[in-house]
Amino acid sequence: MINLSSPCAVGILSAAMMCTLTLSASDAIAQNAAHPEAKPPIPENPYISYRDPWRWDLRAQLFLNSVNITADNPSTPGRNYNEEVITTLWQPREIELVYPVVRNGGFYWSPNEDVEVGLRLDDVEICNAFGGTGWGFSRVPDAPVVNDQPIIDQKYVKGTNAEYSHWESGDITGEYRQLYLKHLSHIVVADTVFNDDLARRLPWPEAWSPESQAFLTPVVDTVGGPVSPDAEETIDTLVKYWIGEDTDPRDGVQLDVVKYLTGKVIEYFTIRGQATEFTQRTTAGGRPSFAVSTNTWGGFIVRPADAIARDPSGSRHDLAVLLTSVLRSAGVPARTVICIDEEIEDPLLNTVSLVEFAMHDPERDLTFWVPIDVDRVRLNGARSSQFQRKWLYFGTNDELNHIIPIAYYFHPPANYQAYDLPLLYGIRSVGNSGNLPEYMIQGLLIEPIVTPVSGN
Image 1 (cartoon, helix red, strand yellow):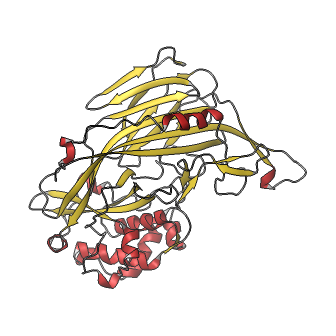
Image 2 (cartoon, rainbow, N blue to C red):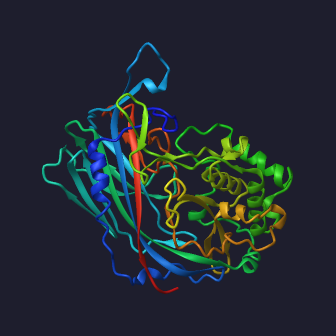
Image 3 (cartoon, helix red, strand yellow):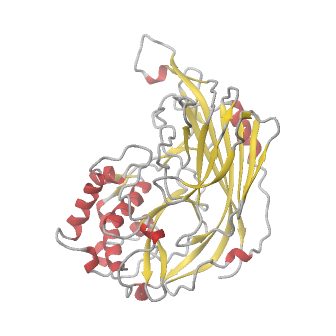
């Protein structure tokens, strides 16, 4: 696969893709400013309340370009700047494509079930789909798909506990250079107020609810690469080192255990390097020239939690991934929430990863999620010894209504693949249809479109 982090021949996008980026960025349509969906669709909750909710329409555009890489000077093998990257034709045949949808969590909820999906191969439109309480499908006339019509549905990918829009293509005829996905979903996000004192009284549940229990395992999520067989043991060893070899985390107050371990992860980890790569373009000779779009991501720089535990420095995403695994190892359901901070203009800095953990009130039979902006908690100087203090950005956060969740997983498992770095989506061949191209240049453009809402 192509190494997008190398300083050479890191990618190329076809003229068609560049044209699409230019044309599609202007078709945002403002919507009604008042929405009844502003009210959280959850039971009354004395532990966490919401302020100043905002409704966002989340539009994503994914570009996959088939390319070929050759060396233009065989006399100097191994020298990256001699590589030439050119677009090439690809016969897709039968493929599956998945893209994440985020619904409900600690500071956000889906105002409706609607999802709109459009698919295109080069300039040939394949289908449009609209999903709600039931899924509708519109097959474009003369689309190059024979036998079964392509179907777009909602799916929980094996090995994940989150919703994906799923497309199984049917038999595609012809050869193409680019696959294009346009995906529109909706989300409401709100600032939060967390009642630490009341939540501290909650006991560990005898058994977690099915939804939250699903985020107890695996301890280490894949981020597109293989997970070491001893990954869980590596995290367990780290947790036992912090809390004591013979200490059961459930002997302590759950909230205190979570805050203590959050502080330990912060003390253990060092932030270094960027968290996101641009998709880049090269000259004909393969020498780096310029980024095609400063809004188009080429992938996330993140590692599996066990690798982070052994080398505790890296991106902000690594910090959140490690905390998620540490909490799971201690018996607390947790998940990484990948988000866009709409108030940060630099696309290399505007992706953030929060962590949510579950708590349970047995009297109300209520399970709820508590958000942690672990990087902000770190910057505020929180430490493990201060676990009984109130921490801003731990539960209580007055800067969440412009932080828009986009996924729980950097990469879906179950044998889907991305090209080099994880980029939320997954693709694979179906049946005996043949292999995917060895090289594809991937680019993702996500545009949150805001509509203010009223109500608590």
